[in-house]
Length: 436
Image 1 (cartoon, rainbow, N blue to C red):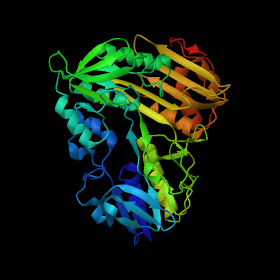
Image 2: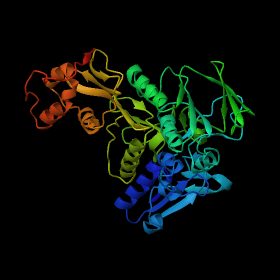
Image 3: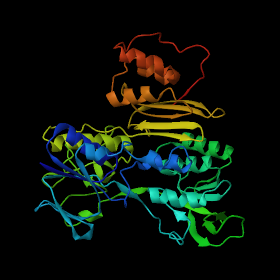
Image 4: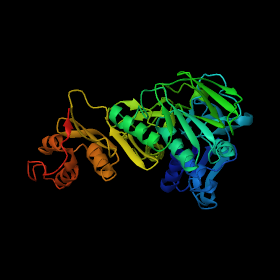
């Protein structure tokens, strides 16, 4: 069997290794398209920027000769198209590569907003190792930096720039930070926390353009904002979102939407072609609908399942949990599943604005289907477990509506198969939660 894996991120690497583990004699080719770089994790790049790891720390596998030892051929090339009838992959340089089964795991690329000055020197995305090398040329301690976008990726970049000692201005078009992961309360807390740490956070604000020149020390660029401000910068980092890398599939006959369409076995509409990771629309566990969940754990899960199916071991993808965890200058925030709430569902909230603590639980019937946390780290595993398994809470649903801080008790009781166990009244001396 001749397997070709297009894309050497977490999904592709996991898939290639899984294929080797179940098919010892197959030919496996893993193709990366990022210059001459070895396979690496984009999510590790911020750690490289602030000096926690070196460049080699971003590599997905640390052992020298890892792929050679597994008998996986690694190529650096870009895909120009797929001939699904002839089963051939067209690569850069007019080369073609035959396959028996193909996995497309080409990931996503950052969106470059349409604005004046987006291509100026000192205006960067933070997506590749090359991007990080350019950022390091401009992000010295005390350097004025404008970060455009305060979503999940933007907030991770913010942490790295802050730890480098940069003077940061965050510009976000939405009314709060991480608007696709947090509600008004949680996003508002994060914004106040950042301002407390010395970051200038401007929400409901648009970048009108970037121009060369500035009178401010250390700055060579000026960022013009919709609120009339002109912000000096030595570096502008664009983090306004990503889109799936599927443009090369035009004319291939492979069905796409926002990403590649796949079935429950991660098969595309073309025979013997599969897709995984940020380029495909896998099943969202919470909604039961296809979606592009651009997070690394989902990519790894996709890669493993797709490889098993390619190797003839039918393994349905039952859905991935949409889960995000952020560490923003020491404040941990997280969201899970249907954090916005379910139709006709019920919500419990525990809020301490002064201490930057927030717990929000979303119920559908007696199941926990979504949650948000700010400043609370002990709840992450319990929330994920309850939402992912869909365990019925029984009487503990009502107890948590009255006192969401009893989550640990509820988790233990339900995990032990005792959903009615424990006293019905809330603990004494606990904060009074807000229940919606």
